Amino acid sequence: MKKTATLLAGLLLVTGTVFATEWNVTGANIGGTVNVLDTVNGMNIEGGDLNFTLSTSKTGDFGDLSFDISVGDDNNLSASYSKTEGDFEIGFGATLISAGSEFDLDTDKDSGAYIKWAVMGSEMTSFTLYPWEVDGMDWDNDTFASDSNISAPGFKLAVKLDDASSVAAKLAVMDNTNTKNKYQVKGEFNTTVAGVTLGTAVSYTTGTKAMYTGATASMNLTDAVSVNGEFFMEKDNKNADAQTGVFAKGSYSLEEINGYASTAYASVKLLNKEVNTTNGATTELETGVGMSKGHFTITPKLIITSSENKVYAKEDSTDMSKTKTVAGVEFTYGL
Image 1 (tube, rainbow, N blue to C red):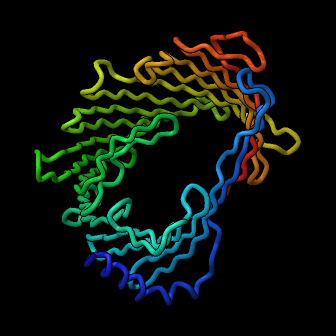
Image 2 (cartoon, rainbow, N blue to C red):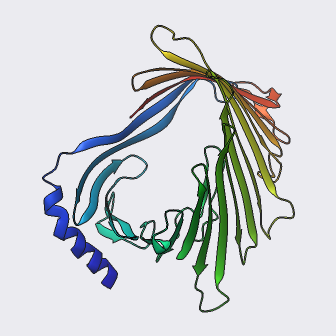
Image 3 (cartoon, helix red, strand yellow):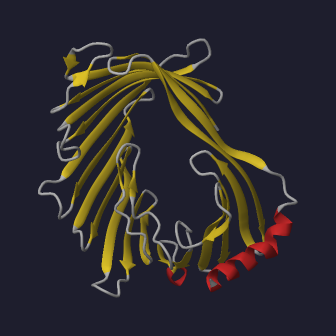
């Protein structure tokens, strides 16, 4: 309660200077897909993203303060603050109002609160203390995600090796008065070598003995051709075998089509049987062409899914198939 009152008082002191500034739309996206062919569900329409963010910020001797109104996945009013003094930087965020609830200043969860120290004035090494929750302990890449984050306080030690490479070590500690403390450690390494951007990370959580390994890679083969891929492996004490997944995608920039910047792509995603023991090993193939003009993108695409132990019922038929085929057009708008 004391920390909540302190943070609220700090916000109120500077709110007056902020509301005199201009508001700008900093992010908005809306999307949907019309599936003209779906061998299981027939023709249908899928709702996509619907997110809208309105932000304002103010920078001065007091630091940087911003307010955000978000509509979509998160319907709330939030605030964030940061300030740098010499070798030190502090920051925090708070949800002020959430849809369907009364005033709620939530500083414990997802607060982003931190104290960062450029170690002895170093431009290469930093130490960050997270008093309530270590940032970036969970996994959420473009394709694969894991909710292994124990949401606990801890710290991060980061070292910039050179202009293209960095390493970081993180530790989160969940204090438990009844049993042993629970720890989660995570190591990260990112680099760019010969035009290839690589990212790797490994984490381990005591108690559940959960280990997660993830890797991403991307590169431009030519001005028109690019490739990217992802890999993950996750194992805990509940499963004898590890869950694994591999994703690869290739993209090719085409000539403009009636003023639309166009990119063709093809991808494959492979999941082993441990990811979904009911369906078994799964393969998903996707191909399409994204056509963009301004903030709008139209993407005709084809997706074929096959699972080892699953058979798909065909629409309006008693026939069964080992594959599911979906052909549709995705419409998106994004800022």
